[in-house]
Length: 93
Image (cartoon, rainbow, N blue to C red; front, side):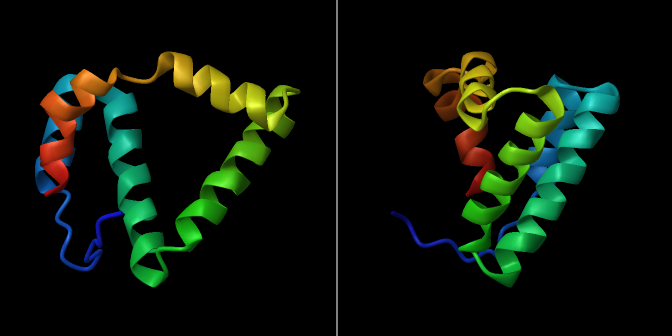
């Protein structure tokens, strides 16, 4: 696993891409979410796993599904590995 200096990570390229490719209110919500997630990572990177679990459980509770069903639905809607590598991964470096 790569070591990330969360204090040095700049979201500028990523936020520009989200605004361009997602756009509108959903793009702005993603920007907001990334900014807050980065804030969590800067406090303690181990908290990211806990935040993911907590958000998954909150979504499961609000939708009447299990956490696994929530994650399965997100997996089915997620971008492909190729799109991640070609479009987004470099925006984090």
